[in-house]
Structure formats: structure tokens, C-alpha cells
Amino acid sequence: MLGRLVVVVALAAGAITAPTNARAQDESGVWLSGGVGPGFGGCELTDLCSSGRTVGIAGYLGGGGTLSAAVRVGIEGVGWRQSASDTTREYVMGQAVVLVRPLRTVPLVLKGGVGPARYAQRVQGALMTANGFSLGLGATADLRLGSHFAFIPYVQYEFANGQAVKVNRLPLVDALGGQRKLDADMLLIGVGVRWQSGG
Image 1 (cartoon, helix red, strand yellow):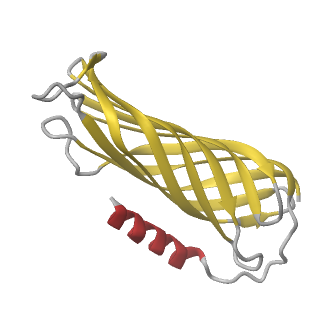
Image 2 (cartoon, rainbow, N blue to C red):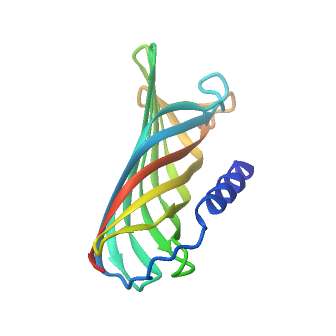
């Protein structure tokens, strides 16, 4: 998973770090943001889910406050859903996030977050769930649309390791009686809009 993360961040940075001629604007106050796009989710647990990615719909909603022209903080809810034949998969999380704009003249914003996560997979009425904590890293292009709005293409990678697994609300245990663990990850690529109260 670490190798995937390095590739994702490198591609995102290379794609959206072109300089902009727009005048850098000071930002202040509260912000609200949301986006939607395809999500590529995967999990790893022998006999129950494979590490191969499946494509579904993903998105996020968030909000928070502005600490400076370069730093914003807040909370976000992220979700992914995929259905095929008799199988439905969902991956949801809530995170505390920090967004940093390294250079005021470049529309690149880097984001990191951490918080609780839940993976669910339903196959023919049997429900498997895994709860744990997730870490998210991403990058956006912050393209201003006037003084209060921004158009934000984004790429984001979420992963959670060692989530405790239950099947139909009962712990899933191995041959030694220990609870089995699941690793899950998700790659989001989408477009969103951010509103800023001060600009």
C-alpha cells in the first residue's frame, strides 16, 4: 500500500503544480467543500475479499476554519459505494483534516487526515464489516472562481490497516481464536467546489 501511495502523490503533484498568473488572495473565515467522482476501492482478506480494485462512486463533504492564507483545518466525511450482481461494498470514514498551500503563487493544496473508518461488504444477505482508523493523503488544484468560490479537481488516497472483522455482527476468528483483520484502501479522483466566507 505504501508504494501505491507514493505513486498517487507523485502523479497528483506533477499534474497540478503548474504556476498560475492569478493574483494570490488572502483567505479567512469558514469554508465548506464537497466533491464527487469515481472511486477505486479494494480490500485484502483471504477468502472474503481480494486486493483487486473495483470502481464505484465516491465523494466527500467537509468544512472548517482558516488559520492563515496557507493553512485550513476542518472535518470531512468520505464515502465510496460499489454494487455488482449480488455484492455491495461500502467504505466510509470521518476525518479531521489539515490543508496546506505551500506556495501562494501555485494552486496546489496538500491535504492530510485521520479518523474512524468502516468497510462493509454484503454478499447474498451475509454482512461483513470492519471497523478501524484510516489515514488519508491527497492533493487538489485550488482554482479560484471569484472571491468566495473555488473549483477543485482532486486526487485522494485513503487506507486503513488492521481493521477488526465481523460477519453478521459476530467476530470473525482464525484457527487460533484471534480476531481476523482486514486492510482496505481507496483512490478517489474527482471534481469539487469550495466556498470561503472571506476572500
